[in-house]
Amino acid sequence: MSSSILAGLDLHRALETGKIFVPGTWDSSQIRSSGYDIRVARDLMVLPGEDGRVGRVFREGEFHNAEVLLQPGQSAFFSSEEKLQLGWDLTGTIGAKFALSAKGLLLLTGMIVDPGYGLRRSTSGEWFSPGADRLRFIVANVGPATIVFRPGVDSLAAVQFTKIPTVPEQMRREVRSIGFDSLADSLLSEDRQNDAGLAFFRSVRDLRVNVEDIDARVTKAVSTVEDYDKRLDRIESATNTVVLFGVYLIAVTILGIVVGNFPSWMKAALEGDSVIGKISVIASGAVYAVAAIGGLIAVVVAVIKSRRR
Ligand SMILES: Nc1ccn([C@H]2C[C@H](O)[C@@H](COP(=O)(O)OP(=O)(O)OP(=O)(O)O)O2)c(=O)n1
Image (cartoon, rainbow, N blue to C red):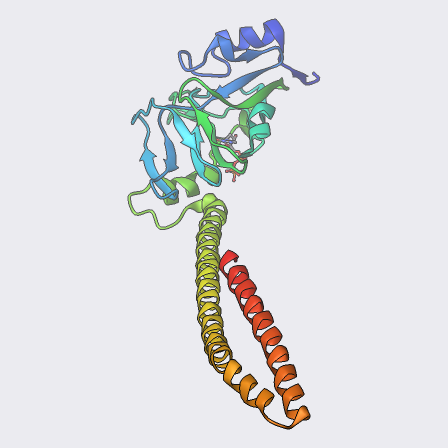
């Protein structure tokens, strides 16, 4: 007999006869034309804590119905709402859902659901379903925005079931997931020492928090330096004004002395006999007056300019 993917009526029939999930744990709205969308369970999950680290643990039967927010960089452990009891003639293939991948959800999962997953062998050798086994996933938000999950409602992964030749009696084994057992030890135990498969994403998140902290400090330092720069500018401008004012005062004082005494120097030179003396007094008086007035104008212009800065 060849293998074939369960689709349409065959898929419905397999679901309704309990060959895939434990009755009451699956929902017909999740059926696709050739597969089934697994939902996030309301229990058996580990959610990020307050500081973004693995924190809140919901064990089997501890229900959490509120929305789960997965911030960028955060990761979580989820189980399927559906409980499995897969027949010996079926196998499942798990895949990510593109709508979630497009948001940046990274789904860490095994790919295969083995025939007989969820079944146990009794001491008398009979196979039965205790109705307990789920699928388990580690997810990480590696996207830019918060991803929201409604436990018991939202889809998490897709599964395609394939009809295969029935596993012969002598080859049947209870299917255990060593991966989950080791996760259960580290994530669900009271004494949680690490974040199991989630550590990488926590480290990335911690790194981002550190970088944001450094960024904030650099921005603050730059603004402080700019502040000091402005203050230095103001001090420099005030100092220049004081110096210019000093120069102005000296210039005005000398000008005052010269203007006050010039008539008497002029009179003495004109009454004297020396022609050179007369010319030099008149020339030096004129040069001094031009230089002093020019200097005064230059100082006033410089003061006005420095005040405008
Ligand atoms: N996301 C998944 C994928 C698989 N399984 C279940 C169904 C599989 O039949 C069983 C074993 O699958 P894997 O081989 O992928 O898991 P492990 O590597 O943990 O198991 P093992 O080491 O036994 O191969 O685990 C699960 O619970 N959750």
